[in-house]
Length: 287
Image (cartoon, rainbow, N blue to C red; front, side, top):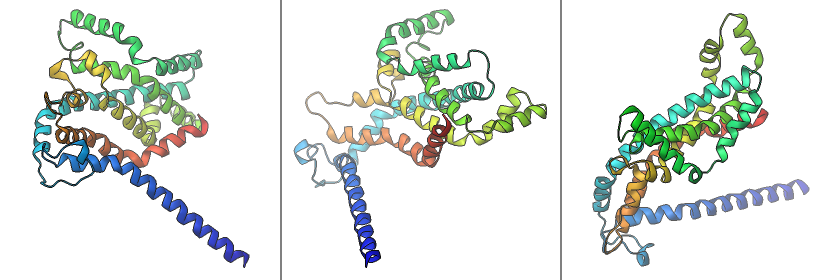
């Protein structure tokens, strides 16, 4: 009888937990529902008072207009997020490898200084950052490249991304047995050869974490993009902010543009998400 009661309690608990999770999913999906149904409404129906209603007339006009307005910004975001993520990942991986497996005097102090970079707010460095990029334009003679262009924005985000990337890789590489590194040294492999042949092939979870983190950060950037780029180099976030009407707000176009601008980050999570928690947990065990 006791076993039956325990089984019933376990079943009730399982169904309760399942119901709570379903409720959370429904709450989470409510904004997505509003985005979708509003994006398929004509401007005459796209009104906050009718946000919950399905379109009486289904149309893709808002999607077409949103794509025309947002396409240059989406391409600029790709030019920003892809190289920025890869550069941050490469530099963070090499830094984490050296700080975890090739110890040197002052390594802990250097790592601490890296971590301080994570806590410097964007707003605190805007003026010196602008002055630096303007100086790089003058120094190289490439006007509009560093300040006013995508390369300068990539540079700013790569520098800001190095601390968190270094932390993730360093904590992940600590979990790699030191015997593997010692064995490669015995076989005559140097620092770079060991990194390329031994460490990098097992780095997929950490790489996925950094790529997801940096790609999302770069793709969603607004503050740096407004300050450091011009109209021809604005990414999707700035272009999305500028989709507004003079007399009436085109809600359907804004909703369609919001969905379009969020698709790349969702794809990154779908493709690399299974490595994300594995990389975080591996770095947390010994970090």
